[in-house]
View 1 (spheres, rainbow, N blue to C red):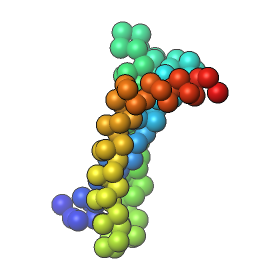
View 2 (view 1 turned 90 degrees about the vertical axis):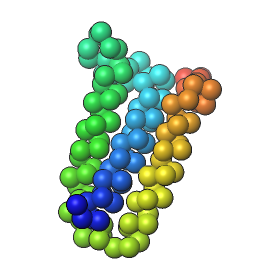
View 3 (view 1 turned 180 degrees about the horizontal axis):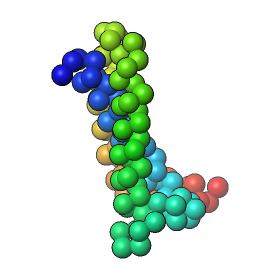
View 4 (view 1 turned 45 degrees about the vertical axis):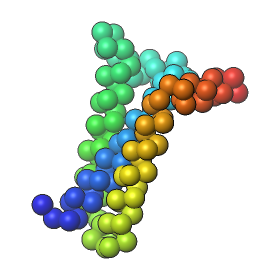
Amino acid sequence: MSLQTIHATLFAAATSLNAFWILNIMKEASPAVKAFLGFYPVTGPLLGLYIASILVFLVSLVLIRNVPVTQTGAFMKFAGWYFMLSVIVFFFGVFPPVYVPIVEWMVSS
Protein backbone atom coordinates (compact mmCIF):
# COMPACT_ATOMS: atom_id res chain seq x y z
CA MET A 1 0.00 0.00 0.00
CA SER A 2 1.36 3.40 -0.91
CA LEU A 3 1.97 6.17 1.60
CA GLN A 4 -0.53 8.30 -0.32
CA THR A 5 -3.27 5.70 0.29
CA ILE A 6 -2.35 5.33 3.96
CA HIS A 7 -2.54 9.07 4.60
CA ALA A 8 -5.73 9.42 2.56
CA THR A 9 -7.22 6.66 4.72
CA LEU A 10 -6.16 8.48 7.90
CA PHE A 11 -7.75 11.67 6.60
CA ALA A 12 -10.97 9.84 5.66
CA ALA A 13 -11.13 8.10 9.04
CA ALA A 14 -10.67 11.40 10.88
CA THR A 15 -13.38 13.02 8.77
CA SER A 16 -15.67 10.09 9.51
CA LEU A 17 -15.05 10.42 13.26
CA ASN A 18 -15.86 14.13 13.10
CA ALA A 19 -19.05 13.44 11.15
CA PHE A 20 -20.06 10.86 13.76
CA TRP A 21 -19.78 13.11 16.82
CA ILE A 22 -21.38 16.06 15.02
CA LEU A 23 -24.31 13.90 13.89
CA ASN A 24 -24.53 12.42 17.39
CA ILE A 25 -25.02 15.89 18.86
CA MET A 26 -27.39 16.91 16.07
CA LYS A 27 -29.58 13.82 16.52
CA GLU A 28 -30.04 14.64 20.18
CA ALA A 29 -30.73 18.32 19.52
CA SER A 30 -33.01 17.97 16.49
CA PRO A 31 -36.00 15.65 16.21
CA ALA A 32 -35.80 15.90 12.39
CA VAL A 33 -32.23 14.56 12.34
CA LYS A 34 -33.18 11.84 14.81
CA ALA A 35 -36.12 10.82 12.62
CA PHE A 36 -33.95 10.83 9.49
CA LEU A 37 -31.32 8.60 11.10
CA GLY A 38 -33.92 6.34 12.74
CA PHE A 39 -35.14 4.58 9.61
CA TYR A 40 -34.97 1.10 11.25
CA PRO A 41 -37.06 1.18 14.45
CA VAL A 42 -35.33 -1.78 16.11
CA THR A 43 -32.01 0.07 16.45
CA GLY A 44 -33.30 3.63 16.51
CA PRO A 45 -31.05 6.34 15.10
CA LEU A 46 -27.84 4.49 15.99
CA LEU A 47 -27.81 2.43 12.78
CA GLY A 48 -28.33 5.55 10.68
CA LEU A 49 -25.52 7.25 12.57
CA TYR A 50 -23.13 4.40 11.78
CA ILE A 51 -24.20 4.20 8.14
CA ALA A 52 -23.78 7.95 7.68
CA SER A 53 -20.32 7.75 9.24
CA ILE A 54 -19.30 4.90 6.94
CA LEU A 55 -20.60 6.79 3.91
CA VAL A 56 -18.59 9.87 4.91
CA PHE A 57 -15.51 7.65 5.21
CA LEU A 58 -15.99 6.07 1.80
CA VAL A 59 -16.81 9.31 -0.01
CA SER A 60 -13.91 11.22 1.53
CA LEU A 61 -11.51 8.35 0.81
CA VAL A 62 -12.53 8.22 -2.85
CA LEU A 63 -12.34 11.99 -3.20
CA ILE A 64 -9.01 12.54 -1.44
CA ARG A 65 -7.18 9.40 -2.59
CA ASN A 66 -6.43 10.60 -6.11
CA VAL A 67 -5.73 14.25 -5.36
CA PRO A 68 -2.08 15.14 -6.09
CA VAL A 69 -1.73 17.18 -2.89
CA THR A 70 -1.88 13.94 -0.86
CA GLN A 71 1.61 13.08 -2.11
CA THR A 72 3.20 16.04 -0.35
CA GLY A 73 4.95 15.76 2.97
CA ALA A 74 2.86 18.59 4.38
CA PHE A 75 -0.38 16.68 3.75
CA MET A 76 1.06 13.52 5.25
CA LYS A 77 2.00 15.40 8.41
CA PHE A 78 -1.40 17.14 8.47
CA ALA A 79 -3.26 13.83 8.03
CA GLY A 80 -1.49 12.30 11.03
CA TRP A 81 -2.18 15.27 13.29
CA TYR A 82 -5.75 15.60 12.01
CA PHE A 83 -6.40 11.95 12.84
CA MET A 84 -4.93 12.18 16.35
CA LEU A 85 -6.84 15.36 17.14
CA SER A 86 -10.05 13.88 15.73
CA VAL A 87 -9.77 10.82 17.97
CA ILE A 88 -9.50 13.06 21.03
CA VAL A 89 -12.38 15.30 19.93
CA PHE A 90 -14.45 12.20 19.08
CA PHE A 91 -13.99 10.86 22.60
CA PHE A 92 -15.31 14.05 24.13
CA GLY A 93 -17.99 14.47 21.44
CA VAL A 94 -19.65 11.18 22.40
CA PHE A 95 -18.91 11.37 26.15
CA PRO A 96 -22.26 12.19 27.83
CA PRO A 97 -20.91 14.66 30.45
CA VAL A 98 -19.56 16.72 27.54
CA TYR A 99 -22.17 16.41 24.79
CA VAL A 100 -25.31 16.57 26.96
CA PRO A 101 -24.65 20.20 28.06
CA ILE A 102 -23.93 21.08 24.42
CA VAL A 103 -27.25 19.54 23.36
CA GLU A 104 -29.10 21.33 26.16
CA TRP A 105 -27.52 24.63 25.10
CA MET A 106 -28.52 24.01 21.47
CA VAL A 107 -32.09 23.12 22.39
CA SER A 108 -32.48 26.15 24.67
CA SER A 109 -31.22 28.58 22.02
